[in-house]
Picture 1: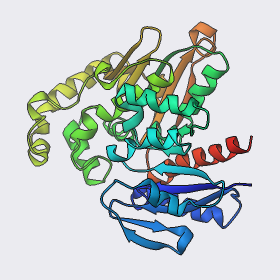
Picture 2 (picture 1 turned 90 degrees about the vertical axis):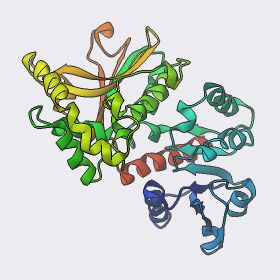
Picture 3 (picture 1 turned 135 degrees about the vertical axis):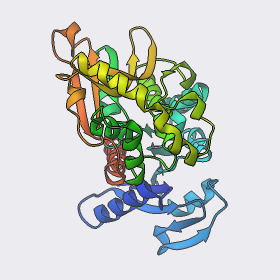
Length: 353
């Protein structure tokens, strides 16, 4: 039986190194048919097949030849895993898929980026001899969000909407904030604890959520791009271009507005949550700070969990049922790596079918 031979781009980063550890542990225990052959950072490549031999490389531009030197067994099923956030790496997906290599990724850039390139990657997976593309961990870390949508559609269900709290950081902020204390204090605490990006605006501006919304929308068959998503940023326009330090000093200027919105929600028996939504029926997508009844599943979320509400012809009011809910940790190196590993196992199983 041919092994799935794995090469990990970004194998020394938080998620990549967690995946490398998980793959090595699995190879020593029960996971047969999957072999880690090599990994790289932006500076060097490590060949596990050659006693962890190391060689320097130039940036993210890992060459096919370097990967082949690692994944060189006869009839190997080559799987390139992308644990980076690099567009240099995602720009290689189509070529890899077209040559029959398989791609597993938690990098959101390709399947939320330029639609023509995304379509080329999808088309490559349908070619005779084309590779397979697995993207589960691009939404919700290790949660089965993409696979659930694909299963619903494959079994003839009609997805009407996907709504959720797609960001672990934004989940933490609004699950923690009591609506009375200054919102800027919660952001500062989250930044100090490492829950936000070094510049919290990268979380607060909604772009990360918008990317995940685009991915979900495309999985549902919509041909949309980031520019089609209506995004409500939590960053005041006058603080968008200042330095990160100045932003942290001045973000308190927004506290009064946030307190007013929290008070209005409370008066209606609701809470505020930062959500992304795909309205498949009307072909619209949005990211916004919205109000939800305290009895809604979104209101009972804790920590940095993600939660997704999927309404379809079978699940939800149309189907005289309740929506399908997926909930769990939406961030963290170990769970994200586990989501990636799950896709590698799915590749192995599909290759044996």
